Length: 260
Image (tube, rainbow, N blue to C red; front, side, top):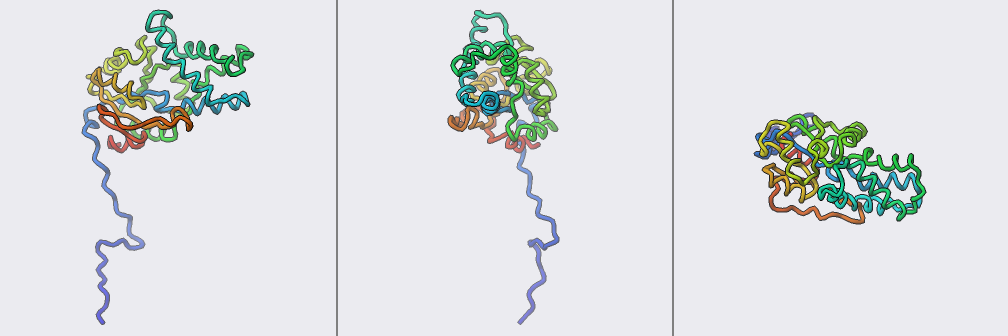
C-alpha cells in the first residue's frame, strides 16, 4: 500500500494562521460622503430604557416604562407649539421640563420639589448609549467626520457625550440653527457648517420621517434598526423603506457597509 500523500495544500495545520477573509467592499458612497450626521434620541442612545431604569430606581412603584412613553409623547406637540409661534424659541431642556410638570400628577409625583424636578429633568443628559454605539462611532470616526444633528440642546448633548463616551468631532443642534428638525435649515445647516454640498453629508437615524426630510434636502441617508426604542413591550417595525441609501441592523453593521 502506498504512503498517503504529504501534500496538505489547501488545509490548515495546527500551527498555520487562520485564513484571512476578504473584507466586504465598501458602499460606493463611502468615498463621496465626508460627514456623518447622527440623530441621537433612539438612534445613538436608549432614551426609553434609561428613563425607565432611573425613574424606577428613584421612585419604586412608579411604572418607569409608562412614564418614559408619556414624557416622550409630549415631545412633538411641544415643539409644534414653538413652530406655530405659540411659544418663543425654547430649548429642549425647557420643553422637557414643561412636559414633565404636566405628567407628574398622573404618576403620583406631584409632590416633587424643585431640586427633585431639576434632577429628574436632567435624566435626558444621562441617557445611556446602545451597546454598539461607542464602538461603532469610534470606528466610523477613522474615516468620516462625525457630528450630532439633534433637537437636543448643546448642553444636553455635551453632557450626554461626556458621560456616555460618545466620540463626536462636532456637536450640532437645533439650538445652533434655531430650528427643530424637520426644518430644512437643520439638514442644510450641517452642509453649510462644513462647507460641503448636501450630497456629501449622510444622516444616520432610526426614524424614517427624519431620513425622508433629510433626503428632500439632498442628503444621503442610512437607517439603523432600533426595534426596542420604545421598550420590549412595544417592539418597533424596522422594515426597510424605499429611499434610504443604506439599511443597517446596527451601527457596527454601518461600519462594515462603509468600509471602516
